[in-house]
Length: 234
Image (cartoon, rainbow, N blue to C red; front, side, top):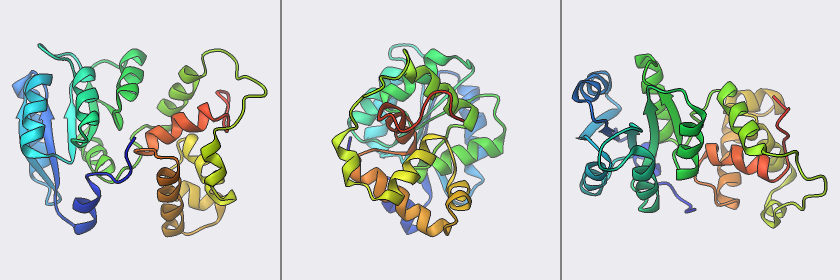
């Protein structure tokens, strides 16, 4: 997993977030485009009707965020996500009609940065694009708990050794990682640790960099796999 996100420069420089829409239904793409195109900080740079087309369009347009359907001809959204992530072609947000765990976890394993249902409102869609563009978590707390529960499989191994990379974290960064793993936002972490949000943002960036995690969604999985949180924790 790489370090700096291709989105960082666009977001930090104040440039519009470049979005690629991928869905085999033209009406869905049009609807998303209508919602996004009226926003000053978002620019729709292309559309694709299947996974193969998405790869071609992403290579040509270099989007910051890809809104990706799952069920499509030629190449589905999960496989397309694997290729996009491998080529560092933007953060992928899976957008699907089906609230199915297998789609959710297959998408996260493929490297998606988030998961959104098509019945989400315009504000949720915009929030998802902006959050992905800044490397923020896109999973609601209840979905985060589903991730943790699914990743648990069997009961945790009692004496599982910690990953060596955890030794690079400070005590405060370790606390932040645990709260990230529980799905808390920067504001919620700040309130719980009695810190400023700017300080929390710095800690989050340090955690992701030191552990070579692409985004906060990966931090959720890492925190569980490292044994820092348990499936029963909320």
